[in-house]
Length: 429
Image (cartoon, rainbow, N blue to C red; front, side, top):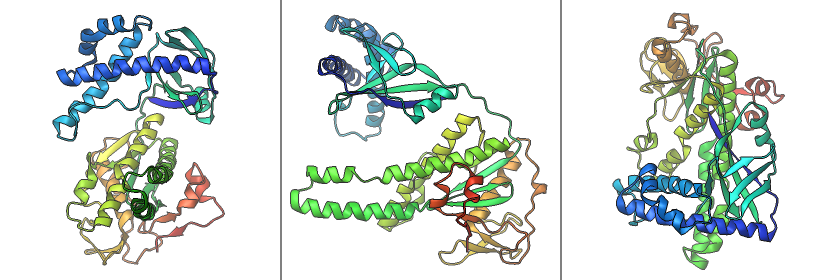
């Protein structure tokens, strides 16, 4: 496992900061030349690019430590490889990429840690010691057995004369053999999980967030395009202050943390739908409503899954993928069709008459698919305790989820603390 943490230095003296500004200028020049050559010659291999250009770079900048030529080739080959791949798909407009933002790549010959709150960096002016300002996330990795990797990156913050240092922590994690499953169904406005026979529906309200920011951006664009033109700087500054991505990312990681903690505590595996690389494109294929298409794209179903996958890897929790076909359309008891009303999430089994919530049926069907093909030590499908009662949302059946509002689960880091909150969670109806 690898995690990157960004820490800052205190404001540097002007003379010292000028050394890093000079270093960045030389490094940028090397990367620009390398990217141009790599794209022109179709070279995407770091080894080949280094063999072709290393000696030229050393002659051009003899004052720099030699390993800057290595890291510049690594940086340039990664950029060239990405550009050539996009160019092959016809997704680029220019013949060559532009090097807009530069972070200085450092290997183990160009930097070293000096205690817990300082590092040293090799430059054209010798080794320079730097203090770093640790924060909560940094200490979390330091105190939980993570170790620093041999590579890091440095970026200059010229407004405040600081350096932003991207430290990478690594940790060896092994997956355990699962004793059960926690199936998770990701939807636009909620994430549903089945834990020990109880279904919990975590409200995310992603649809409302997406539409709110959609209309806010639209109002800003209409106002400032009319006053200052389409490319106005004021409009760009206002749009940068919107926090839609931050809100959605915050929800994903908190839900992922809650679900993975519950799985780790029980030594269970997590069951996810196999959505593919671009599930939103398939979902909107038959949708003509522009607003709904935008909502589906912005819901980022794979983004939620990726957050769960990352947290699972961190704790060694296995993740099982199953076919999502008909998971919310078929009754888990009889395998027959569930008939839903217009725009309703509550449906009725055609054969047995059970009343099912769509998301509850989905997680139970995900569990059944995992039990039939997961290869774990989980109980067999015969152990399911859905009673099949035709009574709508009967007390002995798992037809109804426990709905947990966003402001409730976002406050805590565990399901137990969330359920013990004085505020009451509610049922689906």
